[in-house]
Image 1: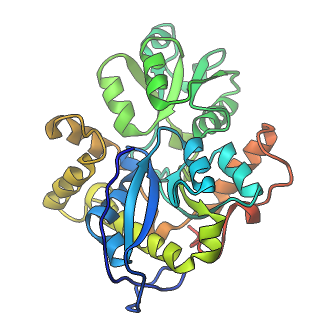
Image 2 (image 1 turned 135 degrees about the vertical axis):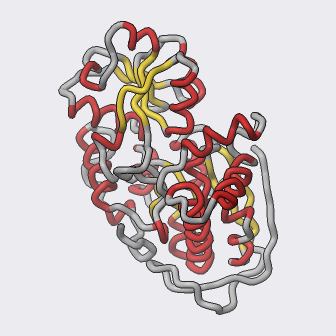
Image 3 (image 1 turned 120 degrees about the vertical axis):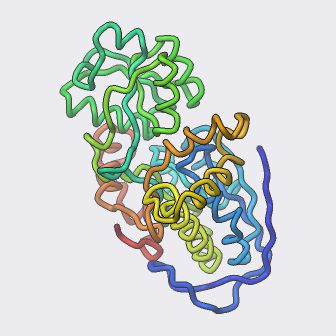
Length: 337
């Protein structure tokens, strides 16, 4: 785990759903741990940290990094992390059913007109005819774990194409990349900042876009423990406000490009501290820019997409039939998309 901390003394406490910026006293130096993946899609948290937005709320943040969604959900439930931003997984939903976790907002989503997640084929499969999602029948599809977002996306794409695919759990994103490049699996879906460099290497090929099958897909959500949602309201509201400010700066610089070229460069340099940090900036920058998908304003949540995901988990037998949206989402924090 790599840790980063920043201390602050004053902050802002306001309402929950619309997260207004009201100048009232806040906490001071409240330590929290935020779960994240080293993806451009998690940049709102990084921006909020680096630009002092968490400190403005009196939050002293340490990041804890993960390589998949389900381990993060377990960490939130156990108290090893306070807040997380990641995809809905079967594990997260089951923990919510047990009263351990709550979704409190939305983050990354697919949006028409914004470059989004790609459907990939290995070079071996591509050369054998897998040059479009319509050719997925009989192929193997990489996922981290059953019930992961990769499983959901792959299943929905296969259903739309009336294809039967075999899902291969490989636990970590890095393992999936290795399996795809070596031809041990045929297909996968992933965010563009990973997909495009892989395709540029010639080892894999982009054969489609997830947005064509799941428009407005709520890719990631913001979640916390039920304890934090229920008993640490000021802290939780402060986290959401800071995150939302980070998302606003990110979208302006890299998605809408309304902030100008200097702001874009500054944003890429900020993100580079966390994403592709082992690469020189000149090589990392194009991949970071390529991964710039929309992060929802005001941490708003697409409930229609979340509901579809929950129903899919039920259909697949991955969660209990009695699980409701009220168990999963704390609507007192949520601004609807």
